[in-house]
Length: 124
Image 1 (cartoon, rainbow, N blue to C red):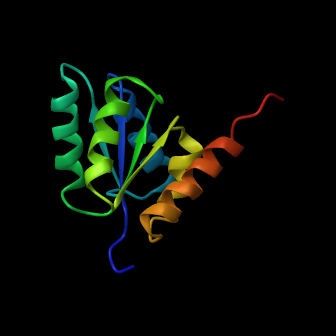
Image 2 (tube, rainbow, N blue to C red):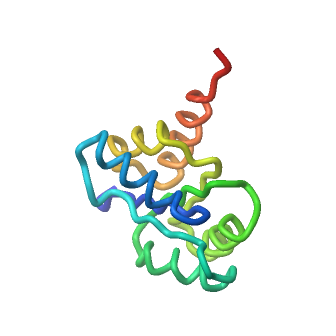
């Protein structure tokens, strides 16, 4: 794949920006993610924000919850954009792994992120 994936983090309020900021701070890399908030937006407005962040690039859209306005906006876009994949339940471990593996194709990048995020959830 010639073009690296974009990571679009979509969440309620300031959560998306906070996750992006910390992933960049910890990894020392910037420009991999774009934060999108649902604040003040309808599903259509959130979808337009996601579409602007994707800007025609292959992307993995990380959403905070597997329901609600952020999820439905991301899924609506993914249905018409084959190079856009959606992963729900965004967490910091999946974003940190994505920073170092965003040269993968969209399907593989999304699958890897979902596995890494799931593996990070534990009850010690």
